[in-house]
Picture 1 (spheres, rainbow, N blue to C red):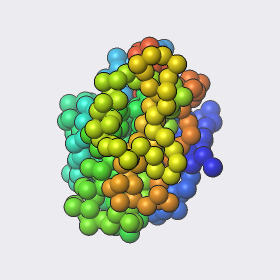
Picture 2: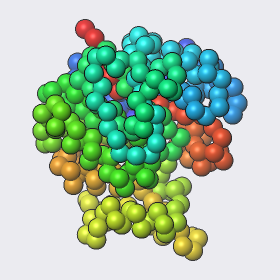
Picture 3: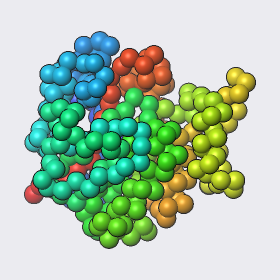
Length: 283
């Protein structure tokens, strides 16, 4: 069953909520945005949530305010990183709340992973085909997000997140829950041999199939491969100690559903950005 369930109406931002985690931690809010319910104009229409794409900053700020309030958070709870397709993970403390909300310069710089145990902090990151990764330790009250394009994936940002949770918060790998959200699928993600070389370095021989699912398949074009970044991240999580039964994985492809999602590939590189979010509401 698809774990990311669409929740849309005319009054609020479009959201894909991670239904299996609804009771995981009291006050937990977690999911992924669609493109409806905002004020941005074409080609960023409508719920663009990132400053860096060329949209009017005031439109972005209004979209962020709408989403935060729809989720039950104060707008200045919004906290994010300036993503660079790396594997750096920041631990978000109470004093970091709101970093990146008003502008890019105040965000965590060169950071693609965020983790916190502070209620009232809304962690966010941005996407237009890359893979959103979600992390939660129900016993410790720790939550996190990671942005994983192919570069972050082969740099093992999923494993970095798990190691950070273990080191900083005492999380046990057997108790961490993870999820893989809407992103481009292997139906649409064609890569060249240079990318595949990096993938093979990250996943040596023998790691190609876990649970019977191939992470790559032949393309119709010579020298090209159809790559399943979701499955690669699932393999990395399992190798890092996450139980397969503790991993949720979406079937949504951002390139196949332009009515719901922005897609960098499908829209020629000029488009808005969805956001992943996770946070624990203050009680």
